[in-house]
Length: 209
Length: 209
Image 1 (cartoon, rainbow over the protein chains, first blue to last red):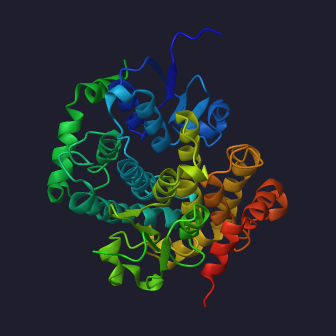
Image 2 (image 1 turned 60 degrees about the vertical axis):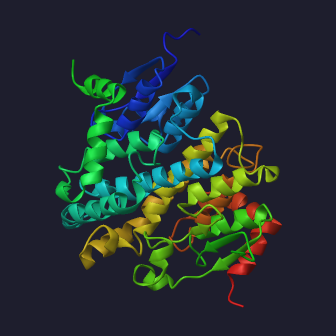
């Protein structure tokens, strides 16, 4: 069966799927975006695409791939000329270490603001979780500011998928009530990544036409 | 400076660090175990090793590496003869997809049993979170049983780091009050992985001498 595009990315504006969107744009991939019904992911046909009922999901010639760290690495390794991921096993491990921290700790901290029902049942628990998000997100970004963001890019001199993933989550800082004045390196990094033409294009694509 | 070992793994019995421990044993690495003060990780010298105050942390000749998916991939890629990780980029993406799900969704679901203070402040919230763990862990393992565990191993015919990581978390099922009778594939897989000599050796190493 012929398809008019090679990659299909299921995404939704403002979500972590932005990182995968930026990567596709950065490597100049032939791709198209799809927006599932984000408020009803588990009650829609989308569970046939991704049974987890989450974005992103990347449809490829091999099958459908989920989870941001996996999608980012796959895009980067499929387009090696873009040099979005190092080949050296130690640096590759550093990429995975950083991206694992973002997906398993930082994104999870953020998710407690509106997705408390994933882990509890009572409204009082959701309120309690929501109140703590500024503290937990500040703690995560304190570590990124002080230790993990080497500068000028996450890995140091080499721009990588880590930068695209970090800027995606750093877009949530103000809404999560984190004091950005305490994070000069993170904010300078965010400004520089958002100015990259590929990232600017992905931002533009997010807007309703 | 001479060191009498090549790798140093900071671990604690029963934690997710078991996966990295198994991988070191499986590839026959020259390693030694260290047990930090697990109840006071953030108040001990251990934060100098891993500022996140979590296990595992792997000390290597290049530096210290954290986050289970990163440590597992690094060990597997550093010892290619053990064939614990595929080289093909698509299968490698599948490895990362599975391991990302374990670290960002399954382990996080489990962590709400005793680590509710990470995301909330009130005892009533902790109790609410704890009550939900059997449900969330059952849901995660339902997906693994029905879709993600291809059989006989996670990736299909090839044994990999995914199997070591899965067995690590599957050890928590009974304590998390998941009905294991509903998970025949997962339990059969767990039995077979735990019977591997390298995994059995790691189990033995966990016991107090």
